[in-house]
Length: 251
Ligand SMILES: [Zn+2]
Ligand SMILES: [Zn+2]
Image (cartoon, rainbow, N blue to C red; front, top):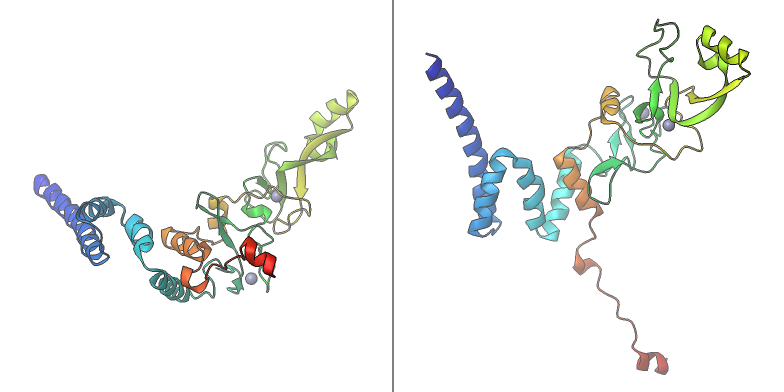
């Protein structure tokens, strides 16, 4: 009995993979891929279909088809530009939220990336790897306010603070006995949607973005960001001929 069960599971998985591979095989043929490339993409695409559909296939499209795809997919997302974001708090469209790193990976665009309607900010402390949410948990072992991400401290920027503010009472007492009034401690963040003015250290953390209800760009969105960043079709921008030395002389 068990044997039949695993046979059925195996056949289902094979059927699933073959279906992916078959669709890619047919589409790559229509795109004019050579036999070896077709076979290669069909095999790779069986396990990682988005590598074909949002990678190789898009590169093979004409500039006109690429522009058309970008327009259609952006409209399907309900956005006016592919690098925008729907605010997770009020669903207003936030402009220029996403960008690509030099090696074409998605990231949060250089800020401020702010909702025009509410307090939401994408490049804020609560979405940053350097953020320490809530109250420090060393205070006598009991955690009040733990799990609260509305305020906290920044692990990147330090500030001089009095020992009573940052240490448990007995440690503060010992430090003061040795002549220490202040220590360098993580900078307090009063509102985690408001980074300090001087902060240039924002680095997105996906887990924290997910907690705010934001989806990190998937393969489809990354493909759209690449299309958005790629230069327009060559026929729309004819190369301007510079006058030669002789012509310059005549002018
Ligand atoms: Zn908003
Ligand atoms: Zn910060």
